[in-house]
Length: 241
Image (cartoon, rainbow, N blue to C red; front, side):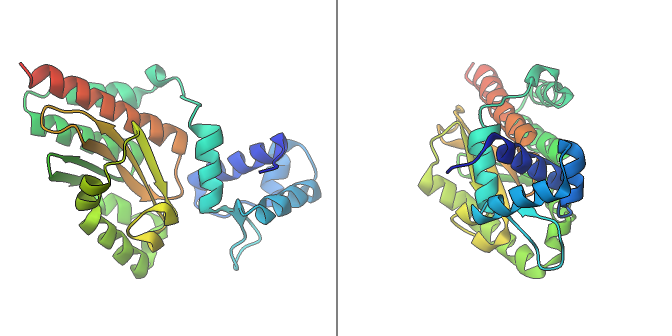
């Protein structure tokens, strides 16, 4: 894809602004941030729209990211930009909550609940055929889920999540399925971000979050990755004795 550095930066800013506000991002906002004219930004937005990376909702003059835009951002801008994880208070809180547990199920639930608290998404884990879920009400409080059809699509995804993970067994340490990339609930417009980890109970254990495609991907990916690392370390240390 032939995309310039400035277009990449505009795409990243639209994604990050939209994650914060849940409102389409206009050219005036971008022009102030980049110190150029609104006309210049509109021209760049038009190119990004032609590439299929952003779209214009019918009711707004602003732009929102598409699934393809999020995928480009994750692959090229967020995946290799691991923020200073040691500086994130969320990492410390998650580590403390998981490592202090004396039972495996409490450690798993602690990690899932921490992800809910830190991301505002639905937290989930599947270990040895058991599915842990937390934060359904938090998920459905997001503005994207005012549409009952989308809620039903999310429910379908959740109903089939554990058997699909067991069958598909995504092999990467961090797996990200955005919008229509989800094999089930394709019309739910959610992102599934999961980390694979090895536990004494299964070598195909997963922990992660399910939330709207409108995400702070850098932070959420870092937290999910860290949750998987912490569970693997804690469960293997405490429950292989």
